[in-house]
Length: 398
Image (cartoon, rainbow, N blue to C red; front, side, top):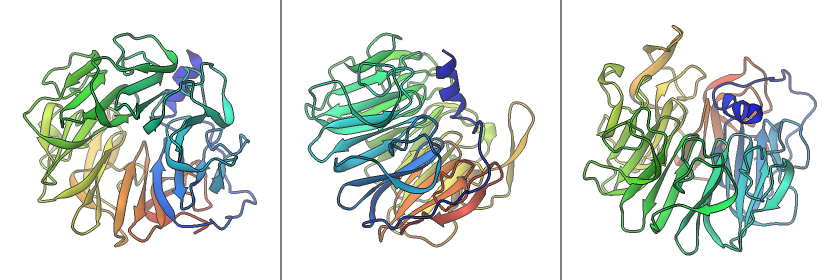
């Protein structure tokens, strides 16, 4: 339980952070980035040729380089496996090989590596199943995936029913999500999970304290429940206490907690939490949405511009904003209730929001990150409790 609590504390703040950069130098990467994702205190990217590189906090071996050493620049995941996708979570990371085999590494206190044990590992280990995978996504202390049969499976911590198997029992190996739904996408965070079925229906399950399941109420569910509102969505994503979905015409919707404006409704936090999908403010046609902890980001389809909204205490919005929000303890922070343009004029192909930082991949294959850099998760050679960037910085080695 203590290790489980620690893994979730990492979702909120960086603990035991080391200052200074040491003598680490950036290794030249063997190709351009094809994917970049932000985890809690680390980040990972897929480089052409199927090579995975990770950087940032490495207390549990989540960088996969065989060590427990925090890295301020990208370091390659050890082994000869070539990957098609990578997903960093809180204290662990998972990836799919180009042959559909699933691997995870890092923290395993709750079985989130899916290898049938609860032992941490600093190198990739096989997920215990005979399944071939289309999607695997790592969350706080659990993991979910979609197999080639389009069924969803989850494993790891299940205290909020986020594994979707009808129980709150932790699972050290994949278990099928209840309902027999065929999925084409699944998204995890910490306490709830969302998925998009092949018939276009969106489902969520797990905790629902703020209406993040989108059912019009705050009743939790240990099995998938349909997102209400009569929308036809082409993607759905789970944030910390909120969720977002994208319609075919590029209209974006979010629901759940809204204390810091993370739903992007464009009015004020006075609009409150929303148990049903509400349209994101502004006249944007989105290509993708990424809800993080208490903020969200989106990619505008036509322009490739990235926008973020919600809390900006660590610069995670990628720009300065003028509004102010107060947290439950009385702290006052920058925030914005409407999408704010990320600085730098970079044209992005994707954007990934996490706890206190975000990363994006430019249209020409360059990786950038912004926000908190306490553990080197920005990949620009810096770390320390006072390291932040309020605009995108280029990840080293490119």
